[in-house]
Length: 283
Ligand code: B12
Image 1 (cartoon, protein in one colour):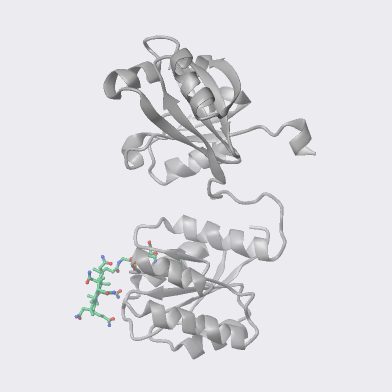
Image 2 (cartoon, protein in one colour):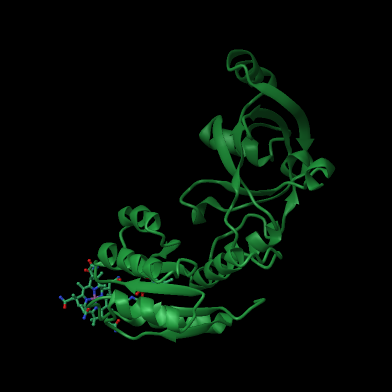
């Protein structure tokens, strides 16, 4: 960490569940942050006052009582009243997914539900504080994918499939190339800022041939655009995600790619894909 980040972990309201708050406090300390824990049953006023007095960079609110929709926005309101809008606020606990957009609309930057690896919380807070402070140096791992780079579609024959995409849909064929590492021939079709990637197997051993054999033609994978792909791979593995590739392999269009195993991703084949910037883009 480039600076020592100070975090207030707080338990608002009449909630006696303190394990999560204690676990997160310890994890943030282990990561190198200074953590102040308010203890149980604090009012939003006490929390906002402590945050200002202690001059913290971030507040972590923990709530398992179900009162998060009242307590978290009240803390935000009081921080605003005290002119402390620059404090990063995150939340955690037993919080239904349906409530998260509401809390985020009130200024809570992210809500961490049960099962979130604590390292993700630490990285998120670090990233948010550095962003706020204009520290631009690349110090983060844990950066979320930035875009859908492309959607891979398995086809028996490019010659047979391309007329549909190009002539019927009217899309633009950008390039066709062979990718020996995947034993496929690929046609890139541009659609807005993303691409459809039609995949034709070059050999019977190609993963695409096996896919078509088992499941027929159709959507094969979704490629997530990332930076620092090896860090992303290591991070996935640290989070218990099974990777098909432990290190990036060359993909189409000069990209570095690595596939995640569908058994770890709710049955969707995801590709992590890092594009090397062209000289023009890098300028
Ligand atoms: C252990 C437990 C208790 C223990 C609490 C011991 C303690 N000192 O914490 C005891 C037995 C005392 C207890 C009592 C009660 N409990 Co209880 N309890 C649980 C239980 C089984 C596990 C909670 C836990 O410790 N998990 C382990 C920790 C590590 O996980 P966690 O807190 O979720 O934290 C993780 C994330 O949520 C997140 N996180 C949490 N806080 C924060 C903060 C920040 C800043 C960040 C970034 C992340 C973060 O990160 C953590 C790590 O991933 C849950 C059920 C469940 N599965 O969650 C019910 C549960 C929370 N309890 C519940 C209830 C109803 C009660 C009682 C009201 C029961 C009763 N009628 O008496 C009482 C109320 C006690 C009180 N005074 O508030 C309900 C709450 C329902 C709701 N919210 O709508 C739950 C959800 C059970 C259920 N399914 O109904 N409980």
